[in-house]
Structure formats: structure tokens, C-alpha cells
Image (spheres, rainbow, N blue to C red):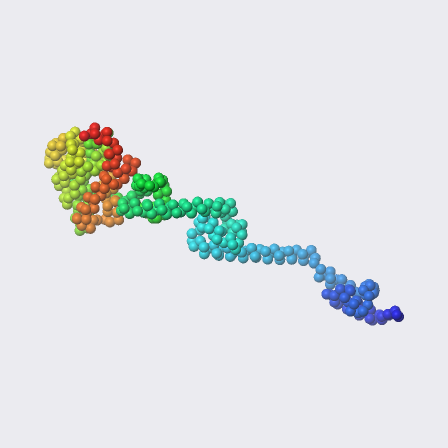
Length: 400
């Protein structure tokens, strides 16, 4: 077979074709031309201008192009991360609903982990993963506690309603402890549940002056000295008069006789006047409750009804020694003042007056009787006063 020969023009054209075909390889161009690859390579050495080499060098990734490509990939990853963070925060904002508390954030992570990793969710919400897992692992105990709180809350509300909203956490706790078949409960837990249920005992007080002193009458010495205690019943009593406002502008009045031993209300009287007979009736009722009040001390303020001849005669007939504190000093009769404040706070509550005299008499009478038999008192470990006296039978026998 004769040897092929090529003109110089053909050779130059072949080299030009290769140099102007950036995407084609040396072998491809050689096959297209029907020549040997080595032959085309020799022609390139002889006639080539180097244009293809410069182009390939320009198109090949340099150190700068590699850096730019990596930077682009980093930016793409950052954009993806920011988009994910944006999506998480958008969902979280709707989920929290203005209640961005730690527990709610944990709950959001628990609900959203199907779409995002726990690590990513905790990073975005600034949470500790260990804290989240601890919360998740304690979900069973937490659910039981919620159920227990709901049951206790129902019991607390029942007692609160039965006492007309007058009991606070400690009195309600004492009431719950006395209920049969229930485990003891801490008053701090009851207080927490009451806050959650928005149950608050009434604490309002009203300052009223009802003492009208008679400077012409004799003043009795202070035999109590602000020591409102006694070793046994029927030794020391305190008394006072408080007014009960009626909606029509009139007033009712309550006179009281309180035993300093148990703080029991042993005598009281309600009337639409503040005459001496009112305090006499209260003292006579106390005598009926105790049987005898001989040698007992009755302490009061300097009101004209207490310094009157009629009241002094009643005290003499009953064998009672009168005692009075300083003029204008409510602290000298603090026990009676405290009773009056509790009465108005718990009976009137948010009202400023009683609707009428009949309702006033009924509500005050009911509260005064329950004050002894039902109401729990903090000073004697939240016992009712009659229960407190019943638990001290030896002292009662010695007093009779």
C-alpha cells in the first residue's frame, strides 16, 4: 500500500482545526482527519501556535478558581442553614403563641423532631439537649403529677366554694387533711394550685370608729396588758362593738364577748342600736355558755356603754371584774379588733354594705356560729375552736 503524503497546507489546516476545537481531544481530531494520532501530534509540534494549550491552561481550574468554587459551596450551605433556621423559628413563633416558656420550647422540639434533628432544634432555640432529654424522659411522671394536681384542684375548689372564698391555702390544707381517705398535702402545693386556679382569699379591711368614750365615767385599770391569753377557759374575756353598714344608709351593730383561752366567741348580740342593752345581752349569752363567770376579767375599750352604770351592775351581778386599755389605742384591745376585721372581710368581701337589715342579721349570725364550730384558726394549728376545746378536757373540767 503506497505511503500517504499530505501537503503543508493540509497539515496546517489540521493543526488549526485542533487548536480551534477546545472540546475535542487529539485522538478525536486525528480520527476525523483519518490520520494517526502521533502524526497529528508531530504536526502540532511543527506548525502549532500554542493557542489550544493557552486556552486549556486558562480553562483549567487554578488555585483561585478552586477557592471561589469552595466559597460558593460554603455560601450555599450557609443559605440552606439559614433557611432551615428561619423555618424553625417561624413554626416556633406560631407554636409558642406568646408563651415562650422553657417547658413549651421543650414541647416544640418534641413535636418538630420529625422534620428537623433534635440537635438543630436545640441550637436554634438555645436549649440544652441534655435538659430536653431529661424533660422527655420524665414525661410519664409529669403526666401523673398533672393528673394528681387536677384532682387536688377540684378538692381545693370545693372547699374554697363551701367557705365562700374566705379560706386561704393553710386553712384549706387543714380542711383537706381532715377529710377521710385522702393523703396529706403540703400547704405550699395547695397555694400553687390556688394561684393556678386564680383562687384568692379575701384580705380587705375597713377601719371604723365606734367607740364613744364618756370622760365623766370612772376608768377601770388595765388587767390584761395586751396579753390576750389565758391558762384555761373562763378567766379572761375581751369584747367590743362594731358597726355593720346597710345599703339604705342605716347601720346594724354587733357586740362580742371572746374567751382569750381558746378565742371562742362565747357571747354576741346583733341589733339596730348601740345602747347598753346590746353589750349586756352579749355578756348574758356568754354566761349561759360558760355557766358561771365569777372572778373572770372582761376587757374592753372606754366606750360609754362599757362605762355605764347599767353595764357595771351587770358585771357585778355576774361576778366579773372590768378591765380597760388606754384611750384611743386599738392595740390594747387587739383581739377584739382582729375579730371585727375578720368578720367584715369574710362576710362583706367585695361589697361595701349589706343589702338590708334582715340579710345582715342572717349572714352575721351564720358567720358567728360557724366561727366556733367550722372555721379553722391558724393560731391553734388550723383547728375549729370547739374542736380545740374538746381536745383539752382536763383543762375544761378544772375550769367548771
